[in-house]
Image (cartoon, rainbow, N blue to C red):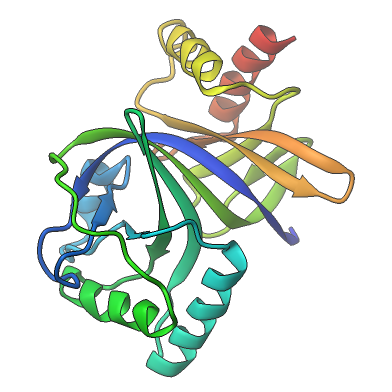
Length: 231
């Protein structure tokens, strides 16, 4: 199957925590945990950050992040994945660089210094309790395999699927529908997020589902529940 590369956004709700050490002094850095960390951690002894947000003083463009990430990767021989990110905590919105691919917590400050050298200004340190609820939106590239009509799988993670839905849902509608579906389906312990893909003929609304050892049949059953609610 051919791998397609698309660009879009994913919005998810997670309990985030502050990075308090191994960062540039006086700055605000957030850790977004893997939603299935308790499952995946059983298969590795390496304790590495999943997804880090280097909170910036002002909004920054996706283009500037991509350019800086390419320079840093080539210069430092790294494999960082940088993306534009917004984090909403209560009534406050923060902007930043979502970075994946940092191999250990002790290298966060090195990565942050590299982005600083590329001209990014970071937000001052902000108090944040561990496990704070946040809504996170990430602009990113998607590598996907077409499994069947309107259903895609990540080529890098067999447990991650995407499927198209017929229309846009705001966060409140998405949350309410998701709560209802999760209480009326036999499939359990899956994580779901909403997103969009930018394609030549317009915007396509999608949902991302993540579950250990998920099957295509499970994905189709979850998708059917959303299609019923959105029809």
